[in-house]
Amino acid sequence: MSHIPIEAAPPCTLFLFGANGDLVKRLLMPALYNLSRDGLLDKNLRIVGVDHNAASDAEFAARLEAFMRERDKASQGANCLDEKHWSRLAKRIGYQTGDFLDDATYQAIARRIEKNPSANAVFYLATSPRFFSEVVQRLGAAGLLDENAGFRRVVVEKPFGSDLASAEALNACLLKVMSEKQIYRIDHYLGKETVQNILVSRFSNGIFEAFWNNHYIDHVQITAAETFGVESRGAFYDSTGALRDMVPNHLFQLLAMVAMEPPAAFGADPVRSEKAKVIGAIRPWSKTMALKNSVRGQYTAGKQGRKQLPGYREEPRVDPDSQTETYVALKVMIDNWRWVGVPFYLRTGKRMSVRDTEIAICFKPAPYAQFRDTEVERLQPNYLRIQIQPNEGMWFDLQAKRPGPALAMENIELGFAYKDFFKMQPSTGYETLIYDCLTGDQTLFQRADNIENGWRAVQPFLDAWKEGGEVQPYAAGDDGPAAADELLARDRRVWHPIG
Ligand code: BG6
Image 1 (tube, rainbow, N blue to C red):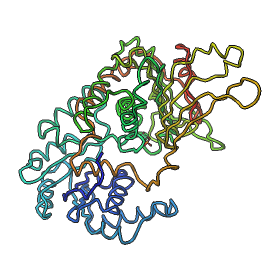
Image 2 (tube, rainbow, N blue to C red; image 1 turned 90 degrees about the vertical axis):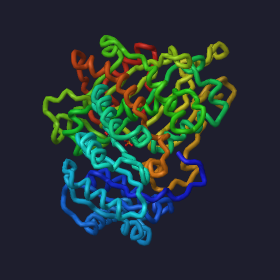
Image 3 (cartoon, rainbow, N blue to C red; image 1 turned 90 degrees about the horizontal axis):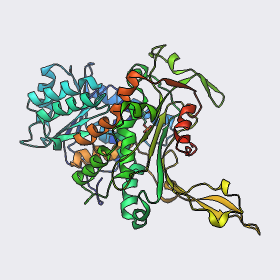
Image 4 (cartoon, rainbow, N blue to C red; image 1 turned 120 degrees about the vertical axis):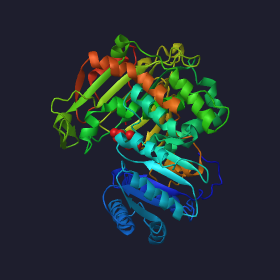
């Protein structure tokens, strides 16, 4: 998160491990293109794809170009691929054929760095997670992480571990060969403007602090509803599930943005220390309480509009008897002064009715005494809704008097939609993250303790589910299983409608 005005990032060689994977062509390359278009890449930035398939520099660049053109065509020009900008970027693209487990690959990488006038290098691990520690150890052994002549940084994609023990082991492995300052653990939610805006809105508008606590807030709901199923990722997803895929990372980042204390400054360490504190304050449930406070769902065949959709167990590369959850709803409590007694309800699911990622902050109700003779039961509590996507913005749900002689109430909205205020350039969300890594700003990246605290808070659910509880079915196109409504009904609360 940079302070304006921003200038081109320093020169470096950016190695993209897993260059032939989806992430590079779908997100990283378009993000690099956007940065280059905006003049934020140095003329000595080189991008080198690394993967085992043989290809030349020119072939790799041509493959990326074909994909970018296809993407632009599919969006009917909305991605605005410009000939001049693309050819400037294409000249900087290279490719290194190499096995990630072969020392020769790392010697070739060293030679690539020597060819660049700048000794800086970033190694971006866009590979399958099983290679993370293998690659990092080899980078270390080859001396490529020594910062004698320039900076050396490693970007680690998610999933970062699959439980607390594996996350701790991966952190230990990374920290053996480099310092925390060189590690950039990505959570792409932090690249979203709307997520960054939570911090800015909370801490730059004095009014929020006045009611941002357990005196005025009744509870908080965090929802990430997706309409997609598991697409081509059946094998990965079936061994992962919704909890691991979305909660310790994306949903906890949203929780941290809402619940953290004000940092002393907007620097990497103050911000990440406050996040680590609040995630670390999530109450570790016993196994019994973890079962009571969680609901797992799995989609069965259903419909979105007129479209007939298969059930999860019929998806390619998914076990036909799979018990993996595609939906999860949780209740968590934060044991600190600000939030004691305020439940945070989290839910996320695939194949739901609409796409909607939002935070709904529900305020304590008014006493209603003055309105005894009105339709009080129609009154809703006040909500502040922060929409992360797709309709980016913030809305306050309030009550107002319906015009006319009767004292009648209506729910109304005060709103701010990004699109009404700002001209947004097409963006992937990775632009800020890549730029920040190149400029050495770790604010939007996860520190080791952030990651481990996240896993520590979800571990009780993972442990409890091994021994009990059942996956509840919900039809594709619905909003999750009925048990998720019961989770809130038990506390005399309801989910804010999705969408
Ligand atoms: C990824 C998960 O990290 O985030 C996916 O692996 C999920 O399963 C995606 O679909 C959601 O991201 P976004 O930006 O579409 O909300």
